Amino acid sequence: MAGGILASDPPQHTVLRVILSRMLMPRALRGLGPSVTAVAGELVDRLVVRGEFDAVSDLAEAFTPRFVADLIGLPEEGRDRILEFGAATFDGLGPTGERTPAARKRQQALMHYVSTTAARDRLAAGGLGARVWEAVDAGDIDEQAAVTLMTAFLSAGMDTTILSLAAAVRLFAQHPEQWDALRADPSLVPAAYLEVLRVAAPVTVFSRVTTREWECDGVTIPAGARVAVLYASANRDERKWADPERLDITRRPADHLGFGVGVHACVGQNLAKLEAHSLLTALLARVHRFEIGEPEFIVNNTLHGLSRLPCRIVT
Image (cartoon, rainbow, N blue to C red; front, side, top):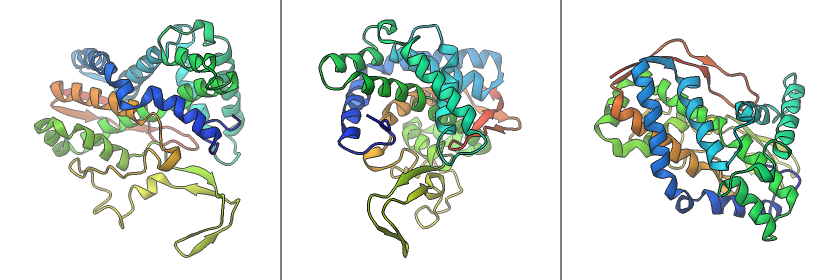
C-alpha cells in the first residue's frame, strides 16, 4: 500500500477507501450524534462562563482531538502529541524546502507512535482503530495497510477540522449579520459550514501527477507532470461564484472544493461535518456575538488557518 490513501491509485486506493468508508459514511456515524452534541455543549458552556478565550486552543483544539481520539480508541498516553502529527504530515507535502526536514522527523514520530503507544493491543475495543485491525483478521487488508489507515486517522483527520472551526469564529465575528441570520434560522448550519470552508479552505493546494496528456484552458499538460491543484483559489473563482469574497450562508456551495473531488474526495468529511454542525449549534444557542482580537496564522506548506484568535463572547 505504498503511498497511502492520499497518494495511491486504484486498485490499492480502492481497498483502503472501502475500509474507511464503512466507518465514516453517514449511516455509520449516526449513533455518534448525541455524544458529539453533549461534548460540544459542555465545552461551550465552560467557555461562556469564562467569557474570554482563544478560539483555536480553547475551542477548536479542545474539541476535535478529544473527540477523534475517543472515536479511534487511543490510549490516554501520548494524546498530547496528536496535534503535531497532522501539522507535520501537511508540512511534509509539496516541494522540498526548509521546513521539510523537521516535518519528516515528526512524521517518523507518528509512525513510532502508531507502532508502539497506539499499537493494536493498546486500542480500545469497538473504536475505529480496533475495527481497522478487525479488517486485517478478516483478510480484507494486510498489516501494512492497517498501519497506513491508522496514520491517516491521525494525520488527516484533525488539523483541517480545527482550522475550519476557528475560521468559522473569525468569519462570524467579522460578519455579525451572517451570525444573526444563522441564529434566526439554525437549519442553515450545514450550508453555513460549507460557506466557511469555501471562503477559508484549510487545504489551499494539493499536488497530483497526470496519468495522461490533458488540456486545461488551452494549455496541454503532458502525462507524468506534477501539477498543483489550487483548491482555495477555485473556491473564490469569480466565474463560478458571484461576489466570491463575500461570506453568504444562504449560498449553499455544495460543490466547493474544500473536501477535494472524485475518488480522492475527503473520506472523513462526514465526520468533520458532524463535529462542526454540533459545535456551531451549541454556539448558536449561547452566543449573541463574537468579538475578536488580532488573529495569528499558522505557517505550513499546505494548510492555511489560525494559530491563535483571542475571542470574547457576548451572550
